[in-house]
Image 1 (cartoon, rainbow, N blue to C red):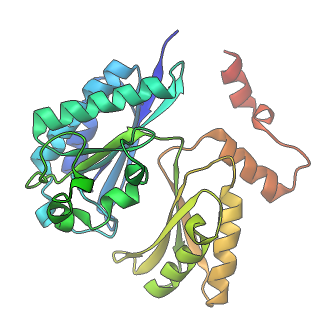
Image 2: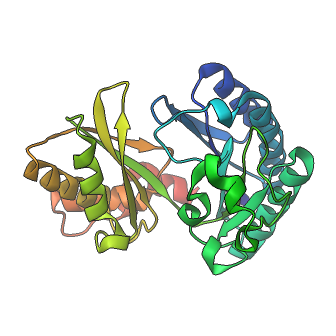
Image 3: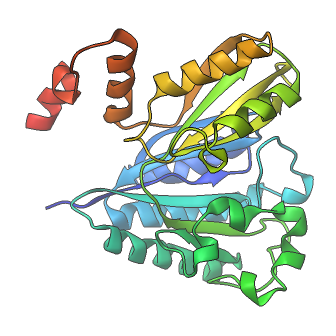
Length: 297
Protein backbone atom coordinates (compact mmCIF):
# COMPACT_ATOMS: atom_id res chain seq x y z
CA UNK A 1 0.00 0.00 0.00
CA UNK A 2 1.19 3.48 -0.87
CA UNK A 3 2.54 5.49 2.06
CA UNK A 4 1.63 9.17 2.27
CA UNK A 5 3.32 11.73 4.51
CA UNK A 6 2.62 15.44 4.86
CA UNK A 7 5.29 18.10 5.33
CA UNK A 8 4.46 21.70 6.28
CA UNK A 9 7.69 23.73 6.37
CA UNK A 10 7.52 27.34 7.57
CA UNK A 11 9.85 29.84 5.91
CA UNK A 12 10.81 33.30 7.12
CA UNK A 13 9.90 35.11 3.91
CA UNK A 14 6.88 36.60 2.18
CA UNK A 15 8.16 38.21 -1.04
CA UNK A 16 6.87 36.79 -4.29
CA UNK A 17 10.27 36.04 -5.82
CA UNK A 18 11.33 33.87 -2.89
CA UNK A 19 7.95 32.13 -2.68
CA UNK A 20 8.08 31.16 -6.35
CA UNK A 21 11.56 29.74 -5.93
CA UNK A 22 10.52 27.77 -2.83
CA UNK A 23 7.33 26.30 -4.25
CA UNK A 24 9.01 25.37 -7.54
CA UNK A 25 10.92 22.55 -5.80
CA UNK A 26 7.74 20.97 -4.46
CA UNK A 27 5.97 21.42 -7.79
CA UNK A 28 8.84 19.68 -9.59
CA UNK A 29 8.39 16.59 -7.43
CA UNK A 30 4.58 16.81 -7.70
CA UNK A 31 3.96 17.00 -3.97
CA UNK A 32 2.80 20.63 -3.58
CA UNK A 33 -0.70 21.04 -2.12
CA UNK A 34 -0.61 24.77 -1.50
CA UNK A 35 1.11 27.69 0.18
CA UNK A 36 0.25 30.89 2.01
CA UNK A 37 2.21 33.91 3.17
CA UNK A 38 1.71 37.05 5.22
CA UNK A 39 3.64 40.29 4.83
CA UNK A 40 3.24 41.31 8.49
CA UNK A 41 4.33 37.92 9.81
CA UNK A 42 6.93 37.92 7.00
CA UNK A 43 6.42 34.19 6.86
CA UNK A 44 5.28 31.53 4.41
CA UNK A 45 3.76 28.13 5.04
CA UNK A 46 4.00 25.47 2.34
CA UNK A 47 1.94 22.28 2.47
CA UNK A 48 3.22 19.22 0.63
CA UNK A 49 2.19 15.58 0.72
CA UNK A 50 3.06 12.42 -1.15
CA UNK A 51 5.40 9.45 -1.10
CA UNK A 52 8.05 9.94 1.60
CA UNK A 53 11.01 9.86 -0.79
CA UNK A 54 9.51 12.47 -3.10
CA UNK A 55 8.57 14.76 -0.22
CA UNK A 56 12.04 14.40 1.30
CA UNK A 57 13.81 15.22 -1.99
CA UNK A 58 11.65 18.30 -2.53
CA UNK A 59 12.24 19.48 1.04
CA UNK A 60 16.04 19.18 0.87
CA UNK A 61 16.12 21.14 -2.39
CA UNK A 62 13.83 23.81 -0.96
CA UNK A 63 16.02 24.32 2.10
CA UNK A 64 18.87 25.12 -0.29
CA UNK A 65 16.70 27.75 -1.97
CA UNK A 66 15.85 29.24 1.43
CA UNK A 67 19.51 29.46 2.40
CA UNK A 68 20.23 31.27 -0.86
CA UNK A 69 17.36 33.77 -0.67
CA UNK A 70 16.72 34.45 3.04
CA UNK A 71 19.01 36.42 5.36
CA UNK A 72 17.65 36.58 8.90
CA UNK A 73 19.99 39.46 9.73
CA UNK A 74 17.75 41.63 7.55
CA UNK A 75 14.48 39.89 8.44
CA UNK A 76 11.70 41.71 10.29
CA UNK A 77 8.31 40.23 11.09
CA UNK A 78 5.64 39.91 13.77
CA UNK A 79 5.94 36.13 14.04
CA UNK A 80 8.65 34.59 16.26
CA UNK A 81 11.42 32.90 14.25
CA UNK A 82 14.87 31.37 14.66
CA UNK A 83 15.60 30.18 11.12
CA UNK A 84 15.15 30.84 7.44
CA UNK A 85 13.48 27.41 7.45
CA UNK A 86 12.03 27.93 10.89
CA UNK A 87 10.24 24.65 11.49
CA UNK A 88 9.73 21.47 9.44
CA UNK A 89 6.77 19.43 10.69
CA UNK A 90 5.99 15.98 9.30
CA UNK A 91 2.55 14.39 9.72
CA UNK A 92 1.86 10.71 8.92
CA UNK A 93 -1.23 10.61 6.70
CA UNK A 94 -1.80 7.17 5.20
CA UNK A 95 -0.26 3.70 5.63
CA UNK A 96 2.65 5.10 7.60
CA UNK A 97 3.27 4.83 11.34
CA UNK A 98 4.40 7.59 13.64
CA UNK A 99 7.63 5.66 14.20
CA UNK A 100 8.34 5.52 10.47
CA UNK A 101 7.64 9.24 10.18
CA UNK A 102 10.08 9.97 13.03
CA UNK A 103 12.82 8.13 11.13
CA UNK A 104 12.05 10.27 8.06
CA UNK A 105 12.24 13.46 10.13
CA UNK A 106 15.63 12.42 11.52
CA UNK A 107 16.88 11.65 8.02
CA UNK A 108 15.72 15.08 6.85
CA UNK A 109 17.41 16.80 9.80
CA UNK A 110 20.67 14.98 9.17
CA UNK A 111 20.69 15.77 5.44
CA UNK A 112 19.89 19.45 6.04
CA UNK A 113 22.68 19.86 8.60
CA UNK A 114 25.23 18.01 6.46
CA UNK A 115 24.41 19.72 3.18
CA UNK A 116 23.80 23.28 4.35
CA UNK A 117 25.53 23.56 7.73
CA UNK A 118 22.30 24.42 9.53
CA UNK A 119 21.93 23.23 13.15
CA UNK A 120 18.71 21.23 13.54
CA UNK A 121 16.74 20.49 16.70
CA UNK A 122 14.36 17.54 16.77
CA UNK A 123 11.00 18.43 18.32
CA UNK A 124 7.51 17.07 19.09
CA UNK A 125 7.33 13.26 18.68
CA UNK A 126 10.90 13.27 17.34
CA UNK A 127 12.34 15.15 20.34
CA UNK A 128 15.50 13.76 21.90
CA UNK A 129 14.70 15.18 25.36
CA UNK A 130 11.63 16.52 27.21
CA UNK A 131 12.74 20.17 26.96
CA UNK A 132 12.60 19.94 23.15
CA UNK A 133 9.05 18.65 22.72
CA UNK A 134 7.55 22.15 22.52
CA UNK A 135 8.68 24.28 19.58
CA UNK A 136 8.25 27.44 21.64
CA UNK A 137 10.89 26.24 24.14
CA UNK A 138 13.43 25.65 21.37
CA UNK A 139 12.65 28.92 19.61
CA UNK A 140 12.58 31.09 22.75
CA UNK A 141 15.02 33.96 22.34
CA UNK A 142 14.77 33.92 18.56
CA UNK A 143 17.51 34.10 15.96
CA UNK A 144 19.24 37.04 17.63
CA UNK A 145 19.87 35.15 20.91
CA UNK A 146 20.31 31.62 19.59
CA UNK A 147 24.14 31.70 19.44
CA UNK A 148 24.39 32.39 23.17
CA UNK A 149 21.66 29.88 23.97
CA UNK A 150 23.41 27.11 22.07
CA UNK A 151 26.56 27.46 24.17
CA UNK A 152 24.71 25.63 26.94
CA UNK A 153 25.02 21.81 26.75
CA UNK A 154 21.25 21.73 27.27
CA UNK A 155 20.77 23.35 23.87
CA UNK A 156 23.29 21.55 21.74
CA UNK A 157 21.53 20.77 18.43
CA UNK A 158 20.69 17.18 17.51
CA UNK A 159 22.40 17.63 14.15
CA UNK A 160 24.90 20.13 12.81
CA UNK A 161 27.27 22.68 14.32
CA UNK A 162 26.85 24.22 17.74
CA UNK A 163 26.49 27.70 16.27
CA UNK A 164 23.69 29.13 14.09
CA UNK A 165 24.16 29.45 10.35
CA UNK A 166 25.24 33.06 9.78
CA UNK A 167 22.21 33.91 7.64
CA UNK A 168 19.82 30.95 7.93
CA UNK A 169 19.92 30.46 11.70
CA UNK A 170 18.69 27.12 12.99
CA UNK A 171 15.75 24.82 12.25
CA UNK A 172 13.42 22.54 14.15
CA UNK A 173 12.29 19.29 12.53
CA UNK A 174 9.96 16.60 13.79
CA UNK A 175 6.76 14.62 13.64
CA UNK A 176 3.62 16.15 15.12
CA UNK A 177 -0.08 15.48 15.08
CA UNK A 178 -2.44 17.54 12.92
CA UNK A 179 -2.05 21.22 13.74
CA UNK A 180 -4.38 23.90 12.45
CA UNK A 181 -3.30 27.54 12.22
CA UNK A 182 -6.30 29.80 12.83
CA UNK A 183 -6.10 33.59 13.14
CA UNK A 184 -8.71 36.12 14.23
CA UNK A 185 -8.20 39.76 13.30
CA UNK A 186 -9.61 42.40 15.63
CA UNK A 187 -10.99 45.75 14.50
CA UNK A 188 -8.51 47.70 16.61
CA UNK A 189 -4.81 48.55 16.58
CA UNK A 190 -4.44 48.13 20.36
CA UNK A 191 -1.92 45.30 20.72
CA UNK A 192 -2.56 45.08 24.47
CA UNK A 193 -6.08 43.79 23.78
CA UNK A 194 -4.89 41.04 21.43
CA UNK A 195 -2.22 39.96 23.91
CA UNK A 196 -4.67 39.87 26.83
CA UNK A 197 -7.16 37.78 24.85
CA UNK A 198 -4.43 35.42 23.62
CA UNK A 199 -3.12 34.95 27.14
CA UNK A 200 -6.57 34.18 28.54
CA UNK A 201 -7.56 31.57 25.93
CA UNK A 202 -4.36 29.53 25.61
CA UNK A 203 -4.37 26.11 27.28
CA UNK A 204 -1.22 26.79 29.30
CA UNK A 205 -3.12 29.51 31.19
CA UNK A 206 -6.20 27.38 31.80
CA UNK A 207 -7.98 28.33 28.59
CA UNK A 208 -9.17 26.22 25.68
CA UNK A 209 -7.73 22.72 25.54
CA UNK A 210 -5.20 22.19 22.76
CA UNK A 211 -4.88 25.90 21.95
CA UNK A 212 -1.76 28.05 21.69
CA UNK A 213 -2.19 31.78 21.11
CA UNK A 214 -0.23 35.00 20.60
CA UNK A 215 -1.26 38.61 20.17
CA UNK A 216 0.43 40.15 17.12
CA UNK A 217 0.39 43.49 15.33
CA UNK A 218 -0.46 43.68 11.62
CA UNK A 219 1.07 47.02 10.73
CA UNK A 220 0.12 46.93 7.05
CA UNK A 221 -3.57 46.68 8.01
CA UNK A 222 -3.39 48.85 11.15
CA UNK A 223 -5.07 46.12 13.20
CA UNK A 224 -4.04 43.42 15.66
CA UNK A 225 -4.43 39.67 15.50
CA UNK A 226 -5.00 36.77 17.84
CA UNK A 227 -2.76 34.19 16.15
CA UNK A 228 -3.50 30.61 17.16
CA UNK A 229 -2.37 27.03 16.71
CA UNK A 230 -4.90 24.29 17.41
CA UNK A 231 -2.86 21.27 18.49
CA UNK A 232 -5.77 18.99 19.36
CA UNK A 233 -8.45 19.04 16.66
CA UNK A 234 -10.56 16.52 18.56
CA UNK A 235 -11.01 18.65 21.67
CA UNK A 236 -12.10 21.98 20.21
CA UNK A 237 -13.59 23.63 17.13
CA UNK A 238 -13.33 26.84 15.14
CA UNK A 239 -16.76 27.83 16.40
CA UNK A 240 -15.85 27.49 20.08
CA UNK A 241 -12.66 29.51 19.60
CA UNK A 242 -14.37 32.18 17.50
CA UNK A 243 -17.21 32.63 19.99
CA UNK A 244 -14.78 32.82 22.90
CA UNK A 245 -12.62 35.46 21.22
CA UNK A 246 -15.70 37.44 20.16
CA UNK A 247 -17.00 37.53 23.73
CA UNK A 248 -13.67 38.58 25.18
CA UNK A 249 -13.14 41.21 22.47
CA UNK A 250 -16.53 42.75 23.17
CA UNK A 251 -15.56 43.06 26.83
CA UNK A 252 -12.96 45.54 25.54
CA UNK A 253 -15.50 47.23 23.24
CA UNK A 254 -13.92 45.64 20.15
CA UNK A 255 -15.43 43.57 17.32
CA UNK A 256 -13.89 40.84 15.16
CA UNK A 257 -12.92 42.09 11.71
CA UNK A 258 -12.41 38.67 10.11
CA UNK A 259 -10.73 35.31 10.59
CA UNK A 260 -8.43 33.18 8.48
CA UNK A 261 -7.32 29.59 8.11
CA UNK A 262 -3.61 29.23 7.32
CA UNK A 263 -2.86 26.06 5.40
CA UNK A 264 -5.14 23.03 5.42
CA UNK A 265 -7.41 21.54 8.07
CA UNK A 266 -8.78 18.03 8.66
CA UNK A 267 -12.49 17.54 8.00
CA UNK A 268 -13.31 16.73 11.62
CA UNK A 269 -12.65 20.23 12.94
CA UNK A 270 -14.84 21.73 10.21
CA UNK A 271 -17.58 19.19 10.95
CA UNK A 272 -17.53 19.93 14.67
CA UNK A 273 -17.90 23.65 13.98
CA UNK A 274 -20.89 23.07 11.71
CA UNK A 275 -22.50 20.86 14.35
CA UNK A 276 -22.05 23.49 17.09
CA UNK A 277 -23.02 26.52 15.01
CA UNK A 278 -26.20 24.96 13.59
CA UNK A 279 -27.06 22.94 16.72
CA UNK A 280 -27.43 19.66 14.84
CA UNK A 281 -28.42 16.71 17.05
CA UNK A 282 -25.70 14.75 15.28
CA UNK A 283 -23.30 15.51 12.48
CA UNK A 284 -20.19 13.77 11.24
CA UNK A 285 -18.11 13.46 8.08
CA UNK A 286 -20.53 10.95 6.55
CA UNK A 287 -23.07 13.76 6.20
CA UNK A 288 -20.81 15.45 3.66
CA UNK A 289 -21.44 14.06 0.17
CA UNK A 290 -18.02 14.68 -1.34
CA UNK A 291 -16.22 13.30 1.71
CA UNK A 292 -18.29 10.12 1.70
CA UNK A 293 -17.74 9.53 -2.03
CA UNK A 294 -14.00 10.16 -1.69
CA UNK A 295 -13.74 7.79 1.27
CA UNK A 296 -15.47 4.99 -0.66
CA UNK A 297 -13.26 5.36 -3.70
